[in-house]
Image (cartoon, rainbow, N blue to C red):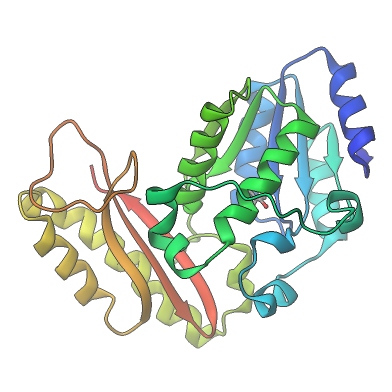
Length: 278
Ligand code: PAF
């Protein structure tokens, strides 16, 4: 595994490959969820690149940025073992030599909802770094976990609208044995907090099970979903059209796909999760 620390080295490596490149962007503190993206990238491309960069521009809360977990030596060992070809590991000054640019990439409606509503600036910062990483890495395919479903929808739209010649691929959300969606942030939960957080996946699974019965009354489905989550401190709990993340109300249309999405804070840790309903 080559370790590339500069944009120039990353671009040069990519240009030399003459082969399909799979790219997995991450912020490190890797878990099985990330490794499942790596595995898929390796299976579908001749070369695989992973990036690790904790992007300050996408943290709306500076304390959240400071507390973001990191264990670079562990990450490097996992990636070496996973058989990737290159690790892009730029420093902050390399990524933002003149500070975070003022340029903002944004989508109005789909960005202002769900996480976008509660984390002002988050998706603008995320789109900026993903845009730049895609320019430097120049992959054939880029892989994103569907736990961050809104991120996936926005990145896919950006790649289409800016005509990046690549495929954006969403990979299934993975859960630990107790049902909690895998996330680098889970390490900050106390045992009690973790037990409380399990209400999230229980509520999602129940909502999925309720969907066939309540698909003609999505307002009632949403109310039942909220009731299940009541013990937690909820930011949002919504039933959405999975294509554009607009709020789904009234009756479900047979040709559309729906998703239940939630953000909650447990032990001061912000957790997001979702499930496809059909
Ligand atoms: O999902 C993440 O870990 C980050 O948002 C990403 C895509 C690496 C951009 O910083």
